[in-house]
Image 1 (cartoon, protein in one colour):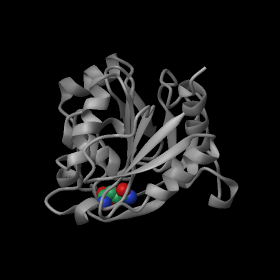
Image 2: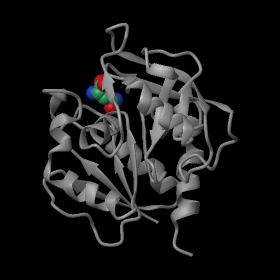
Image 3: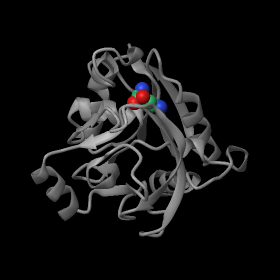
Image 4: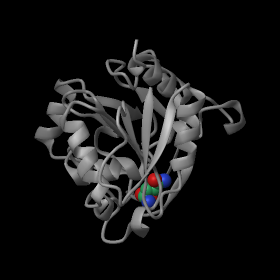
Length: 222
Ligand SMILES: NC(=O)CC[C@H](N)C(=O)O
């Protein structure tokens, strides 16, 4: 399985994400934001956490208009897989690949702590390694993690089983406790918590590792 990880100026979880993919057995290519194409044969694109372009204008807004994001959108439009974590989730909403927006946290403070996440569906390659309904522990680290979408969009996400994770104890005001959502074809996942930062015992826990193991299992060519 070949993962491409996008690097923007200000990304700070790109290497963590690469380590998590490699530990699960994936080959990883790092791709600079000014590149206009992805490496041949990429199975999944990782859009990492951080502070792309210094969070200027709006988190993820400038990154979403960077040259490489046109290739990321084209990859998704062809049915390719994309995993956006934290700032990556913000970028994916800004590109329109995922609905809704990430607003300022309800408490107006940056939050950096482990949180309980309930696996709302395991019907995706990202979550197939978890039992649905299980609560895992994964850290959040953001100031704009307050997920918002209109009622019709939220009802549709629920009806189509596209809410991947919810917060057990909502830290940021996200509507319907949403922590991560899937695209309609279930091949794009955006989530605010960081599974790559809880993926080996040295992190203090490894609940995130099953996501990367499940992806390599599902996407590795037979
Ligand atoms: N860790 C992150 O990716 C943070 C995303 C963004 N800079 C925020 O604070 O909301």
